[in-house]
Length: 113
Image (cartoon, rainbow, N blue to C red; front, side, top):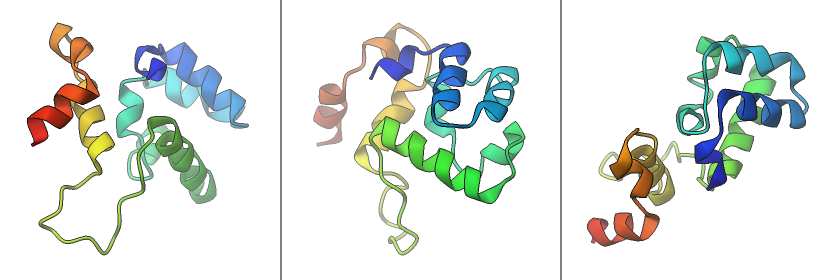
């Protein structure tokens, strides 16, 4: 999960490598780091200045691929967690501080049981 340590410049370089160099400024100006990528989805991208729907879908899919998460099911029960297990873990990792930095996926799974 090296992306968790990316600076906003690293994120911009990644966006450029995906074929979206015109959006690098959106990520740099909004200081989107690797940890903040966890929250980037189609609902959040317009706040960054990305409004082309096809680009939004593609970037969101690339973010999910990078994070190893799945797209939320629209038909899920409201009793289910709002995200898959990896997504919930990454939300914990998105925080700052020593605890979040040292928190592992194994620890997350142990706490979940």
